[in-house]
Image: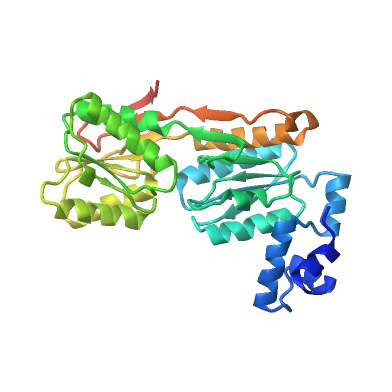
Length: 343
């Protein structure tokens, strides 16, 4: 294990300065702090007090690092993870990276320095493997919702490709032909998966999927608003829009109302995950629901298994959840359905 003296020597500072940086004390210049932190990350240095704790016993703490604390999906994930952690006798620390890779890096550095037994990570769109690998090797990682190419770890995700495919078929069955999909981040695997499901549904029915009807964004409300502006400015507007997530759906609805478009009479709206309580919006939204609570539970269960000596030697596992199509009336439906599980 790397010593404080080795870090000090490579960073060109005294051991006491390394100690101050490791304890996040403020009496170190920004330039020196950043240099020392780089060396700490490179050498995978763990402060002595934490190292002794890791050798002696577990801390009983696990960390969940999500990307958007305002998302109903990630709220459900956090609830499921917290309940599962409590049942396993663990405490859950929650972090919100806000899709910011720099903030994510800071969280992971803190996690690496503290006595945290394991990490459940929703990686940002730019999360480099070297960043995750900078965590001490004894800290297991479970990736949630998204994978990292080339990084071997347990993964919990939902099959939203199939979900978006079935949603596309549903819209086609209602007579929609000019169907757009909007709002996802191209560098995050969930967006190309959802686009692929949408395109497959249209292709199977012999319906064109114009490139101008596929509008990426940032998985947020502003992205939904901007996408609708672009679509309406193109001339021939879509007759249905699939929002990439609940936040995007809010922006889509905002801008359609502002433009004088009626839902569903003028434009149908469907979404991945629900931004509203069931009775809070009329018409009721048609949506693909991801089982966030169950995914949070499963991630903790995988992490707990990795904490056992026998679990550390097991190959990585992937747990894939099915989505559920919740049929509302926001796309021209006349009846509401509740339990159309993807097959």
